[in-house]
Amino acid sequence: MKAFVTGWAGYIGVHLVDLLKQAGHTVTGCDLGLFRGCEFESFVRPDVELQKDIRAISRSDLQGHDCVMHLAALSNDPMGEIDPSLTYSVNREGSIRLARVAKESGVPRFLFAGSCSVYGKGKDMDLDENAGFNPLSAYARSKIDTETEVRKLAGDGFSPVFLRNSTAYGFSPMLRLDLVVNDLLACAVARGDIRIKSDGKPWRPLIHCRDIARAFVAMAEAPPDSVHNVAVNVGANDENYQVKDVAARVQRLIPGAQVVFTGEIGSDPRDYRVKFDLLNKVLPGFRLSYNLDTGMEELLAKLREHKFGTKDYEGDAYVRLRTLKKRLGELSG
Image 1 (cartoon, rainbow, N blue to C red):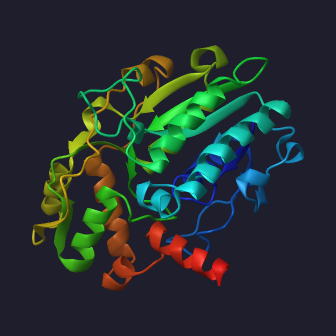
Image 2 (tube, rainbow, N blue to C red; image 1 turned 90 degrees about the horizontal axis):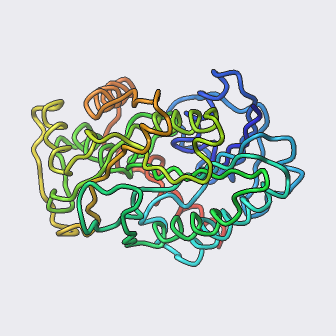
């Protein structure tokens, strides 16, 4: 298989490139390079590297590929709210255009990185793929709109799949700390306390970033009819946690760290617990390789190996929002 991976140099993308090449596939990686210089460790590179805005990808860039794996996006709620119009331009218009260009170029498969954040404040718990959307951010709305429009392109040899990923966590060579698990653990290592900005009650489905990459590979290799134009929650039923549960696990790993409720955002409106039964049906052999405990243990070992400290925690490199603001400032200046 010849795969075209957007956002390849990101938190999940570097895992995806590694797994694809391990499986013997050829990889073209496309990335704008916004987070160049934010590496935590070295990583495997694609066979072909293309530095390009996804909104400018052409037919000639995509011709000859068997699958587009579309990860690139302004990647979380705070980043998306810096400039909602930019979020819609990149995440929605850019993604829909990319799917159209892929179809026009004869690429048979299009895998889209969606998000369980589309459920927002869940009206019910244990939400499956038929649950109503309740988006609370430009980021989540962009994912819904893209899924809606790209679904219409299915057919005539073009098969999209929509992976509604759980909240990512865990170690990546392109480390991110602006994720709830990683933030709580890194805070405990660097500062000696576990700072919860909400009341700790919201539910989140969690998944290791490498398992998201594994799901993309499995979807690309699955029989086309089994996943054609399907939206699938990606995670596991026993990997739904309340934020306070995550904090308790951090405290077990770092017993001296005290839990502190800062009250910065009070009651977090994003609150959803998700079901993953459909994933087990469309990919019957797929299981997560990490649970929260093993993923946190690995990340803790990596932080200690790199002598992670306060300067790292408070710096820009591993927090996408800080780096993005800095880069946007450089561009405008």
